[in-house]
Length: 628
Ligand SMILES: [Zn+2]
Image (cartoon, rainbow, N blue to C red; front, side, top):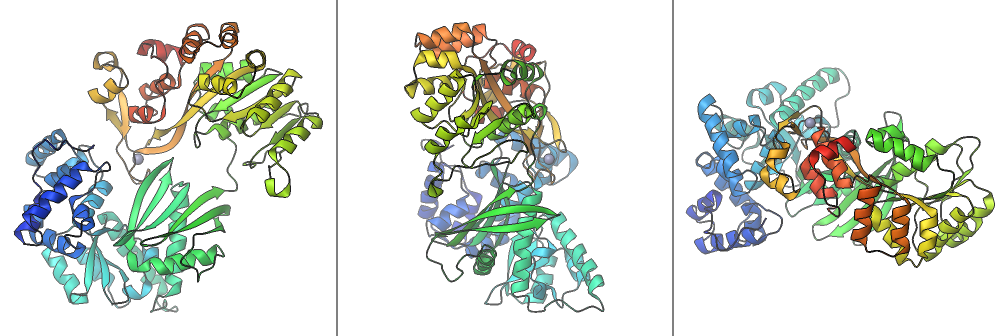
């Protein structure tokens, strides 16, 4: 949140140190602080100063190294808005009481995890954050270095640029004896990056084991070269797959490559890499995707078939030309992505029962599944079809494109270029004598018309929609100029959904929601006090996000006579909403999500972020009894 400019400017310790060292002027600092306060996305002061061109990365790093001890970590995190005053006070108390570092106190209190602490520290001081692993390191860099030496001083050389400058990963900014040890190896020809102590130690251990294995055998290519980049790229892809990432982002910044994974719908910061590796990484990936490697001026796309642990993955590559070089994004699709059973979707037991009996088991009518892109509606659609799939039922689909193949279902991918357009496919599909018709998406009046006509002639029709909630789905049909009497006589149900991140079971701990969170949801402390809430604090298992996997939040509207009448009478949305709550026992997506928070599956933040507030909330007790 941008701070109010009327507030007195907070003092910046790093800023002051830079002024003291005469790296920047008082006026430049003032300007940078004002710019920082106005940013929508919080940014570290160091980055703002670099963006404004007042200072280089090296100068910040030097200043932090010089003043590191006088700058307290708590103040630095506070300055960046990563922790609050209250957090700092508790951490300082623990720090005094148990004589531990403030950073460690913040970690113990569950306010921060080590990963977050380190990468913020690194970026604040203008250093890269690198989570090293042996497979990412150029072999040539390690030749002639003894594991004992690395182990004694706890650091690991990572890569070397064309000017011979070595990037060295260290676990903390200031340590004189380590500095001397590094100096002895590289004589001033190095830059420091910060990394997690555990990963550094583990890398050294792997290096030692590797050396033992290699003894007597052919030594690794001392020059490193292309082999090491192949290994590095494979390693990044492997790690992304292991982390269940849907996308791997390799992004050039002005001074580093940033690697991020999209996991459970959210970007997760993984590591930095030295910027000098970019051309080789980009070439390697472009070779894998059979792109034109000589082309550096145009955006390109490609595909990579990747096999890991006997599973095949289809990687869709996009190469985007940016001011800092080629930005590479790979979407990771698993060819064996399995079907999810109906009871694994996360519907509460009473809703699941109604969905089966009043929706899936009904022989005819239109069933709509709605939600934004990435809300999991395709998964729900396929689970539903799998449930209906038996030898006595003919299921025929028109999809754009087919995402999962299910044995026994007649599936068709729309292909405009081949002349298999949506319109022509819809015309043909009804002649296939189906019992169930699946239209990937209702796009317009024509496809809506086909769905309605098919339902009128006794078919069951499933389709998806992009609308906010269930009532929005009905209104969209009205907007598409479908007669209200046709809607009310054919549509049997609308299911709206979102995916919420599930709390990681490895780092889950009790948690009390803040009054602000509760207020935003219209709940008060008194009502929630009797329940115990949970939150994940971040661990290696969940990539320090506190979440692992996702659970659906659903809103199931089953049309009854009262709703059908309201549609016929073209009543406004809020009236239809009220009727559906009062007469159909509809539990809104937000209510369903809140019940999942109370049951320890997810957190309020996810509810606020993903579910619409279109319905008024019932009392918490009632919500819980309705979602049993
Ligand atoms: Zn965890």
